[in-house]
Length: 146
Image (cartoon, rainbow, N blue to C red):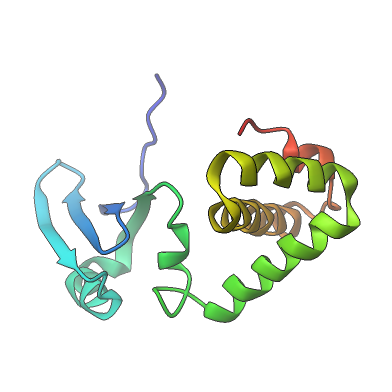
């Protein structure tokens, strides 16, 4: 197994849940400098806890379908969340392949969670499209398993 070697002094891991997050910040030697449960996903409190380490910090987050907590009002930009949700709905109407993929997601996960998953996939796709300067590819988007 390959492990990531961080170039920063500190690494922060977040185990994100719907109503709380467990945060652990460690230095390069593996010493815990922050280890706490943040009830209510209080993002301001989270920022306060990691403030002394932000100058050289890598943050990773483990979560299932509540990734949006780190993107706006619920720890992220509510407008982006809304925009990608709308893009998911419009994408289902425009691209037949995306529509059938979305139908499988909805059948397996339910309407709201299926749309949220599709919106998250679109957000990641846009990020990588901008980063790599590539065009949108429906096949690549739906190539992952359900």
